[in-house]
Length: 399
Length: 135
Picture 1 (tube, helix red, strand yellow):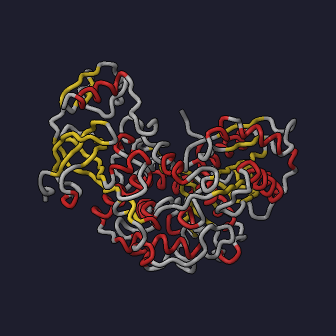
Picture 2 (cartoon, one colour; picture 1 turned 60 degrees about the vertical axis):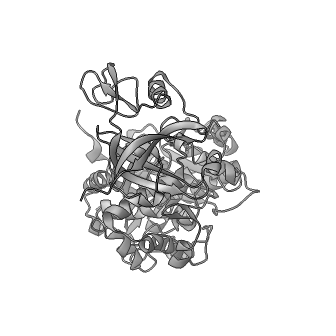
Picture 3 (cartoon, one colour; picture 1 turned 90 degrees about the vertical axis):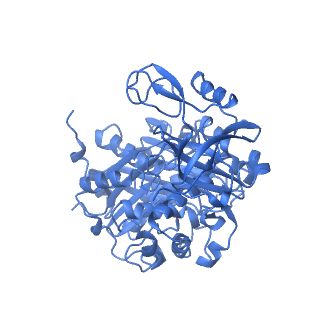
């Protein structure tokens, strides 16, 4: 079957974004937060709300009821989009939903099945569930009931198992891993929407509680309430709406396991193939990239991504981050909203927040943390127990 | 306990029945002749229905491991600290397991041998390091 992939480069774009502050917000319901970011994204896009013809939400973790109650339809009604929106849906790919929803929305607008797709994520991990429930929830989803849960597997242990092997193979030090958290916190300090805005040191990270060896508490993501949204349309329409559409240039993806214990290489996953595919479609070289917006639910994943996507050689990412190259002012700004480790982890929304940050940076609207002259970004995301590798190449220029 | 109890199917039951009887069993494809894990209704390689169960040698290497010290799933709080890992069996499959013995001896690529342990009220495969990694 002939591929039509080469027709997609530059054919669709993000044109509007919305986000509420991430953190502990007991009085802000997940639905209210979803509505606030949806309105902000549509207003930001300049599209009359009556022209939003598809509303796409993703899964929330804090309460299965939120999904089962058809939140996608409720949002259409609450936002006053009934009668003009022709399709509502939920697209769920775990933490990879950001990239996957962007691709899906792009497919809808380039095929002509939709004109303007509104994409929304909202979750409430800080105040929508107890800490005990949150720990048990993250010992369930994405972890096979028969083959890993009986051993007490959970997400901290998943990160620890990967760190252990990665450090064994590459010689990366505990200090270098901790420096990822320090770099992300430096970005969060410049982000008014971030949950943690106090500078962090390597010593503080390494003296925090040991959870699952070698993972420390401050190397774990911070569960938060939050929401983010964006709007996708065709490139043609996007150019009518804004001077700075954020165009799709390429994408790559690989699903390499469901159960972590079935992953053939837990120090690499599918990033090299996904990255190669995305960069080839975009027609770019890794050296052209201005910003690396890497999904960071644990520090280890930033290091693996930096290496496998080709920003640095295998085993060199730790020293690269420790030297400050990914921090504000560095040569490869990385996860510039502070990521899930510092802006806060809103489940699927954490990845959507990183994609929204990518759009914001490329549009030159990131305030104090704006990376000067950034026009080309790589955004990554991953779901479950690091089951897949999703890469997007985005730019304000179709070169 | 719903968070941790294995969800049994006809395919997984034979494995867990083996554990209860002190045997580590693996499914092999009766058509393409390859072992696979976890058990499934048909072979993931060639999709053939023929399943042959064989007892595993119980030997392999430790791919990775962690010692859980804090914040485990609630049902596992009484087990703290506990060690879990991923082993690569000599048959060529990987599986998650509990680890027993000297936790300080845990090192990636070390040879391991299968045994069993009681964990959270369930008998599970548990491996121990039995030497140093091949250089």
